[in-house]
Image (cartoon, rainbow, N blue to C red; front, side):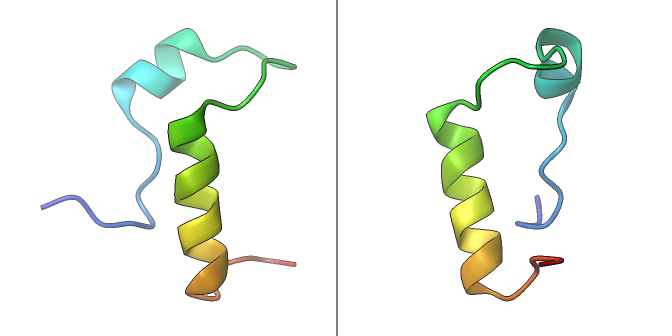
Length: 41
């Protein structure tokens, strides 16, 4: 089972480069983690 706080996957690591925009999927994951207070801010 995949946990919500495990947001890195092989596809994200291989296709993401520094300075690239976040995907909708990434934005949703970040939003959910912030709601669950997993944010470091």
